[in-house]
Amino acid sequence: MAVVGVDHFEALYRQHPDPWRISSAWYERRKRALLLASLGQERYRHAFEPGCGNGDLTLPLAARCEHVCAVDFAGTALGRCRARLDEQGIDHVEALALDLPNEWPSVPQAGYDLIVVSELGYYLDDSALAAFLAGIDESLAEGGELVACHLRPDFDDRKQATDTLHQALGSLPGMAPLFNHQEAAFLLTGWRRNMKDEP
Figure (cartoon, helix red, strand yellow):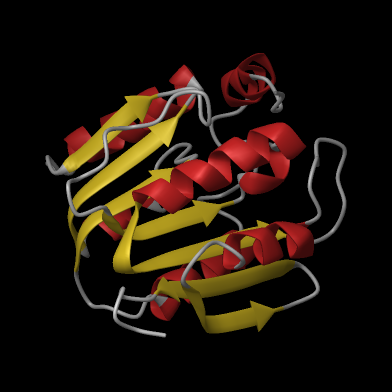
């Protein structure tokens, strides 16, 4: 099983506080705003954000969720995320250092009612992606929302095509499409898991 290694990301975060200009670039800020505006509920109980990085999406998710589990395996990025949460007095976000998909956070009894996979899945090779999809499948609650957002143009570290990745996420059991926003630069897709008594 292979992913783009933690050493690669650690080096990027140590060389630059915001290596992809997530905080400052208009493209990133607009994309984040579209993602947040696409969420179907005003409030969520338990959200899971794998690959949280410096916390640019974690903070606005925290404003809409009773609890957020934010995970990253790059300690430098996670430290910055935790510092930002502390600065704002946000105490209902659990920021964990885990090696996804080999390690997985504890899942709430009823499951996560929101999972956001942003700019992460294409770093997983086929076997790692299969394990990641299995983790998502086991973690998402009935009636829960799954949202994915990924860059579409090719780049050196890519192990999965974005459109193929989103098709795989949408093929998980019980997933019903909610929205699909396509641009040349990125793909933003959302699904809702059917309740057991729904078709």
